[in-house]
Image 1 (cartoon, helix red, strand yellow):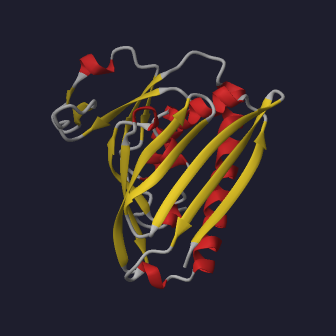
Image 2 (cartoon, one colour):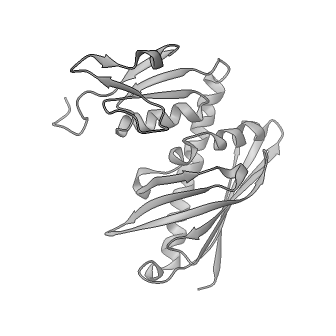
Image 3 (cartoon, helix red, strand yellow):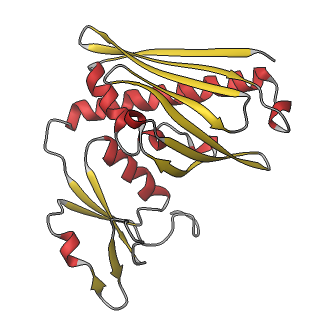
Length: 234
């Protein structure tokens, strides 16, 4: 068994403070999680700056398990760290580092992990290492692209965007893209929002809508039509 270490570093053409700020925005974890990882955020409490936790549900083959991580270290603009509280591995410590390099930044991910017990302990260490290589290659590629988008359009003022179908496949991706770019999103839903939830209610059959919440929107994206999974595309 023992402890293993995985590292990946990428140089990006964005200042370290801006790259760090991108990671602190809502939706960053979701933007950096590929669909094939089959990981869903179930609960968040706090964030990296205040020692918060995040609980994921991860599916691997027929097995589903919960994975809870706690933010344990935080240095504004330079570093934050996540450690497994409960989950499938024996241990997991993920350090995110952001080191200024001229006008850019060296983004480094370092993961120290050890195998778990039970069914997940049967997964060969080499397979875990391969999966980590694929995961972080995706993360760094996605990060470079999103930062390039931020450099291209980020000079303008933050926008407030309403989205119908914000919990669907496309709506979810758009929502996280917008929030990590510094914009705010108002979900427009056909069910009444739960207590403490910020969303506008809309009933297209009766015409009822929370118009007061729509005031000040810069744009509305309507994605609550037919599902892209229904029928064949033409």
